[in-house]
Length: 375
Image (cartoon, rainbow, N blue to C red; front, side, top):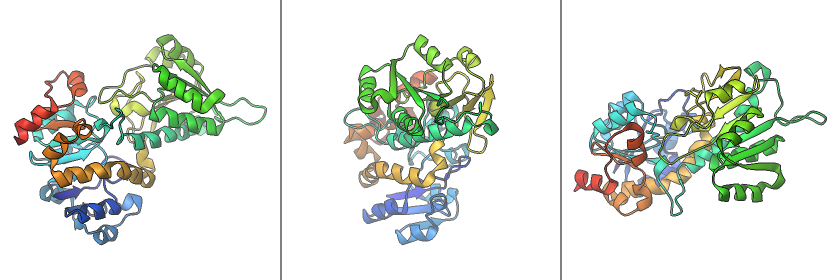
C-alpha cells in the first residue's frame, strides 16, 4: 500500500503521524511511504532520516494526497486537506467529529474511509490510541494551570504548591480517567491539595487506593461540582464520553462565582469542552478571561511537547497502522472489532453513533457501511 505522511497544518502543531522508526516498519512490510518535505522537523526527524528509513520525500501536501492510498496524520484534517480527500482514500488520525459539523459534512462528502484514533477500543473497552495523548495532556494540564495562576499570566499570583508557612493551592479534577489520573499525579507532585470528582465508584476506589490521603475523592453531583469548583484555585476538566460531545459540568453561573484569578483548564475541548464558558484556543493564544477566571482551552495540548507526544502516539498506533496497510481497510476492520470501533465515515456513510446523535444525522452500522462500500 502507498502510505502518505503530510505535515500537520494546525496552528503550532509540531507532531507528525509517523516517526522514521514507524516508516521503517512499514517499508519492511513491503509498503511505500511518501513523506511531505519537513514533516518531521518539529520532533527533530529530518528528511534525511525518513529517506534512510526508506521513504520518498514529496514537495507538498497535494502530492502526498494525490499519490497515496492511506493518509496517516495526528490532528483532524483541516479544510484544505479535506478538499484533497477522495473516495479511495483511507484516513487514519484523530477526528473528534461530535462537536465539528463542518468537518463531518466534508468527510462524508469526500467518500473517504476515515478511522479515528479516539474511538478505537481495546478488549476491555478502553481507548488505547487516545490514552498516550491523554497521559500527556493530563500531565500538561497541571503545568499549564500552574503557570496561568501566576500574576503576569492573569492569575491570582498563587504558587500551586505553596511554601512552608503558606497554604498551597487547591486543584479540582473533574473526571478520574486517564487524563484525570495523570493530572492528579502531577498536582500532588507539585504539592497541591487535590480533589477528584467522578460518577464511577470503581474509579474513585482505584484512585483512593493509589493516592491514599493525598487525594480527596468525591462522587460527582451538580451540588458537589459546584462546591468544589467555587473553592478551587485550579480546575481541570477531564471528562470523556467516547465519541460524544463532552457534557457541560461547570456552567456560566459557577464560573461567575469562582475566585478572581482562578484557572480553568479544559482538556475535553477537543470534544466540545466540559465548561460552559469554554471555547477552543491555540498555543499561539492559549488563554482568555471570563468573569476574572483564566481559561486555558488549547485543543491540541500535547502538540507543545511534540517529541514526547509523537513517539508515545506511534508506540500505540503502529500495530493498527500496519494492520490497515497489510490487510487493507475492509479486511482489517472486519477482522478486528477493536479497530472497527474506530470507523467514523465510510463511502459517504456516518458510522459513529455518538456523532450521529450529536449532529442529528443518519447512522449506519460499521459492517453495513463496509459491505455497501467494499462489497
